[in-house]
Image (cartoon, rainbow, N blue to C red; front, side, top):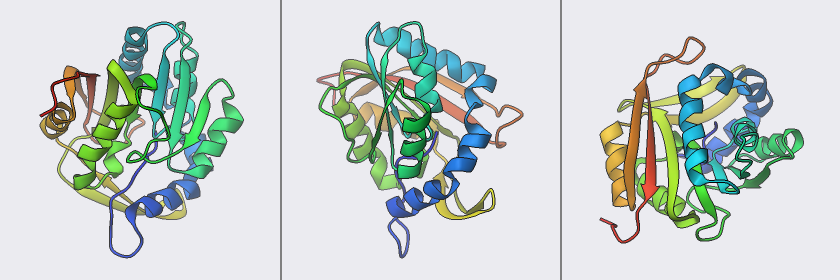
Length: 228
């Protein structure tokens, strides 16, 4: 579940820093995290609920799809949705295409998604908003809303807090990527301002194999005519 965007920092723009960082760790990321949903029953339940609500034959987007493991899990559901994975990292997109031909993969940015207006019936953005600069959250949510049909649902997840952690080494690779922790009320308010209604909120602690952070999942629905 990799980020599809990045914060702007001194020197190299944040989006390019995040792209290069995830390109550097793509293979290791797949080896370590490619089966992560096996140990995340609550996350599976929420993703499954979103897919079920989207309906049979739906088109579901995985925004910040990494090597495609979540997209593949969604594609394997009984509802058999069409799945489109989008990621900023060309290396991640290449892994998705190689390993999961049952899904489609596109290279793209959360601020400029490679998708038509209303193309998706539902979308997940799992730990991808955390690479956005504070001023980028609102336009990213507006862009996601653009790609969802009226009534389409969005599931977002993020680490809870108010800090920014910069990582310069990741599994032996040199990287430069910021992880923005977010407050659930702030994200919920940003979703409402972008034209979404909140349908469910889940806050949980880490599973044993995860980093020791508290996490939030918000399930939202596109509501037309209610922009703040």
